[in-house]
Image (cartoon, rainbow, N blue to C red):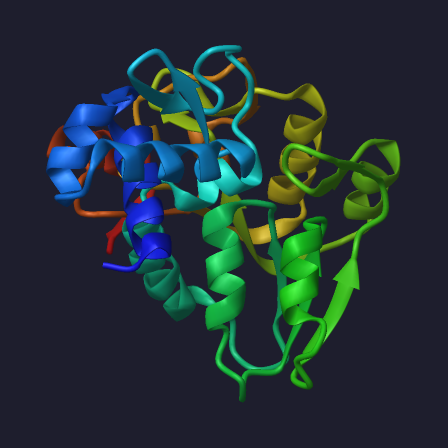
Length: 255
């Protein structure tokens, strides 16, 4: 295993378990504790983990802050790849219009759009715009607004106002939490306002969410369950959660 592969695996494991010791990681990957410490130092400089006495925790765990893009991108990466691949089937036909919300799973979907599919794509996410800007089959519209350093997404009154003028075929939306009791939630008020406007602008709303977020609730609600049409998640989802969502009239697609 190359150092980069091991570091990504360590980041996934720390994100999934919350805290791991240097000794446990050394045993897991059959390397020395010195190698693990170097890996953790690399990941800490990238803002992905935080070093603590004897081990590491996810970057947002100590301060209770919203995880940064790099942190979220490495967490549950295999699940997100499967979800994005499944979501490709829900893209509209040639000539359709799409909004891609900011998020690490929606960014993966952007990379998987078939080259021959001609779409108009609207996004407020700088990383997604950068990935689609060179595609000859995509008419790309980048929404205005203030770019948040945490998510690299435009937010604010200008972003919401631009969305209020739109009506698109499909919106692909990310969420930090999804529960039957409280709907779709995110930690930040400005992000929530943009997500709320995205949902309102779409004929069909598709939520891309890995199973670790189902049952979670964050601070700010941006949509009720009756506002969404399809949930695409991974095979780690509990059967009870699938049935509860289906009783709310939502189609659940398990990747």
